[in-house]
Image 1 (cartoon, rainbow, N blue to C red):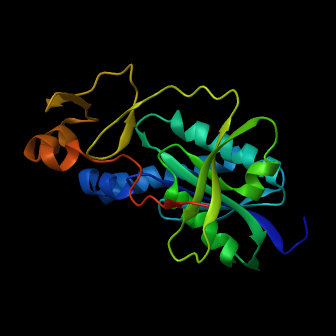
Image 2 (cartoon, rainbow, N blue to C red; image 1 turned 135 degrees about the vertical axis):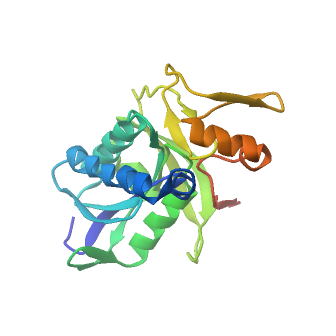
Length: 228
């Protein structure tokens, strides 16, 4: 890949604002700092460009090792106890490089694809999906209209062929993923059961169950598919 091309990855924690509201700034910073586990997932030719609060930007030289890095990162986060889910966007194209940062439309598209992803999901553009390798399955999402991106982007939800990540319950208040085998406070509201991470979140749920019962986990601002 020529020097002006890069595989750009955006990964951000789902529901970080909700976590901050429920548990305060200090606990939220501790959670964000654990994005340092990204370093352990890096493959050759893939680097952390920067962290931005609850998000991280990666740059890769080639698509296959970058996607392997992304898969390891998502798996690591999804197995972290008491940690939010992550959503990821991946695009490839020309970038402008500056120390500690990348600029350009490729970066913008990767960021918007991350915003379009659901919790625990990797969303990639067609060029990335086509070159990801046989270990990945690409489920078509159609052509997505992304915020401030002029042309719709053909996108795919990417997953490893052999991925086996156990389902986890999600606290509707702070959005942290909970170990389904663990013991947590629980509430039932309008016939649906909810698991809470702590007495703090249970009290917040009790005070305003309507606010939390219908929260859509990890899909704050979905992009719109378009026909054609």
